[in-house]
Length: 312
Length: 302
Image (cartoon, rainbow over the protein chains, first blue to last red):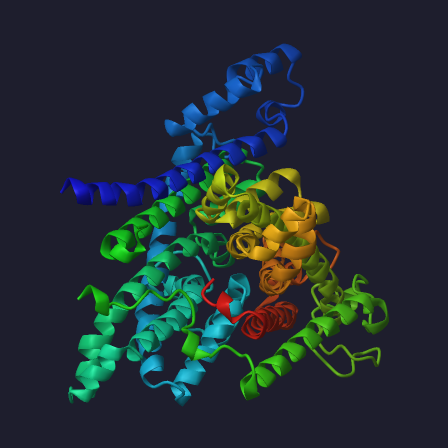
């Protein structure tokens, strides 16, 4: 027990350290960028505010203190979930961003499930019927899907499936039809990647000696595939699929903007236009933290499932 | 049984496309690489010769000729193959000029990312120890969060300009160079010729520049090609979000953004620059894959 605990800790500790360094990097870059953005006080006050008022606000915000102290205060505030007040919405930035979070999570999860449920069967079929017409078509499409810029894919979907064919609404959040095009757009890259990687994972297993043995023993082909191949290809597929979930978040900014989806990605872009930096920082910070936590969790689960992924 | 579990594959299985050294397969790959490079050269030529190639002035507005569909012969008797936009500007000419922004930002970003990434990667591999740990922890940390979000934050504050875009897009890609070059240098460093040169009094700089760098050059070219595709798409994405090159300078991402509102009545404004962008991204990234197969099959899976 103590031995396996040590193994687990020895394996998790470096990954945890890496995640913490990432969190610290995000915090620091957000701080540096905020300082670079110049004095926020003129944005908060009317242009004709007297000097005494400006000095008072500067003191309230702690801007008269030395930079290292400001950095410490900033970090401490973030730990408490205090990102300052939104200039545009006139309430705490964290509360604003939290209000938009559910739409992003809904879109992200749908896109991820759609990608995995479509791509894994296609990848498997492509591997089993290697060099068939379906294989070539699916893999060609996957290459295009990986190379296509997310935002243009969204535009094409709107043009063809919404404006011309009138199958889905062009944007906004509502019933399930509103979810289809954004989820397809956001999930396209992940779908393409998962399909290609599933194919090569299954191909890898199909070439293994134990598959040949099973066939030589006269095991029915469908049983070879169902029992021996899928079971052994499952781990890499699950890992790859999980890792794609993290990359989805980066695409959310673009997809939400294209489809006017009221999530934190679109909020971040709109807040940039509004010069509402507290909201931008909070949205960027929370997205980065979600991304880091998800990647850490997948890394950890993978390592626990597969002993060979741990350092010897 | 644990031993029956295959090693996880993180990219195409090797047998999906066997290493292309020797034989008909290598010749075919070489031809594909040539075709891909020819495409990039053609694009560069189009960008450089834009003033002579573009049939119209890309910024000249013609309010009476707004939103005109693609035609071989417009009212003035001249072709407008890609139609005109909401201000009556010729879309084809703007696509041609837009190639300049894509290529200049893309290539410059690749140089920035390549220099930073190669320097850090070679240093990490050559020095080892604490230097290596610090650099690689930074690399892992950067991979641990979506850089596009930070890029958006940074550009939002600093304001969009060519230098800002190039540095931000360039730095977003340094990790790929650093990680792969580090592992190659680790192998090279332990080879006898490195010891021999140092025993003969060769300085570290000499070893790295004259003996390590030439050995990792083909790897560098492969990563740079794949990174070029990524940089071009990232630039277009930022321009689309209004954080890239600002109007009236034509950029593909910006054109797609401008045409969005007219998608229902004038599909051509967004669609043509989008298709050209998609084609460029596809061809450049495939060229990178083919180059990798040709020069360095061991890189598969990175």
